[in-house]
Image 1: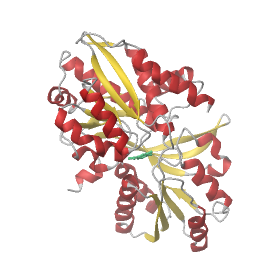
Image 2: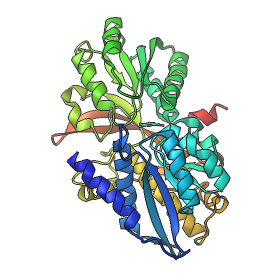
Image 3: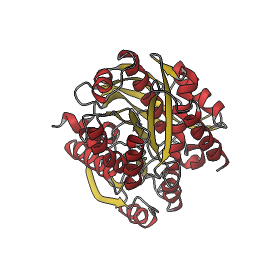
Length: 388
Ligand code: DHB
């Protein structure tokens, strides 16, 4: 909690970096869950936005940049109302953030109407980018990691699986994409379980899962819930029964991993970011995030925020400071750069992110638990669009 408060303070400071002034200011309205169950997503992204501005300055192409952080608590209705206020009262040039899919969905019609970019820094449902021609995504899709997870599992002796996902759009995506790829490769899924998003209790389902003796439980939980899942998994003795955890890397979230205990060592997941990614850029990123935020380890949500700032800055440079959704989104299409997660680009056709997906295994390194990458699938597009 202490840590959260410190970072929330930093986030609020983002809005104060540049006082509201002249027409010269480019305003970015960031809708983030700074409170509530998805708080860690908002805290991580706000910290990354702040760091990006400290590192790259608050002026681009001669225009001042001001970020206004609004706490939507991950509630769609609140996000829509706050976005409306930001558009009408603050006259923001860009909307950004979106800690969960329902908030991204809720705001898309407003971005379309106002013709301003909607930079999705967290939400991971495939169809998010199809809700408005002004959406550009810098996070990830669940399809990207779930298909690769299925293929890896099949090649590595995992044949019998129980699927367990959080019951909202990204969970349904991960279930569907994993299922299609896993069944196609000859795997077997004996149960499809969907867990409520709020106050999740996995225990009764885990008990049933243990009795069914699968090789693995395929799990998708949103960022922030991995700790509860792993605790209940271990309490119910599934690890002792030799059942593996597999899934998109949201479950072994860097934000929570150290608290999960040694039972999680050896867990293999597929994902786009690990704080242990060995590039020099990432080492600097992790060190800077830790330094600025009371030693907080950045997670996969944070890089969505950091790279979301990069697309805005780089687009403004390309347009020489001209705003407007058509100019800015036009400039973002096809943009490629190096992120702390590795090389990434914005697909010019879909405005969705193209990135490496890494297979990672939890290991203890110098007393800390990390997702250590051991295989790279380069330049993965969203399977949700390739399918069509
Ligand atoms: C979404 C939210 C998460 O916290 C996550 O880890 C993945 C996806 C979402 O709402 O899209």
